Image (cartoon, one colour):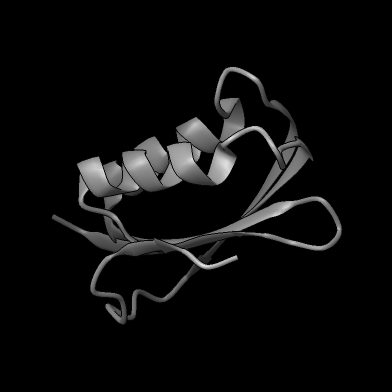
Length: 92
């Protein structure tokens, strides 16, 4: 399976709605490594590393978000796979 890395910024009503928790839970279930955090500007930022299909599932979720969120846009930047993470964490 092809390994990929995606750096993501999610915009909209995405803080205070358990976005990080839902992201963490899905990433762990899919075996995706990386992190997710809230940014001071109201966005949520994440880095996903793993099998291409699993990362695509994470990106699909980011476009939808949890039930109480409203996603207005998602910026995705693919970066070279580094394999630097041991798990998926909420960092801030």
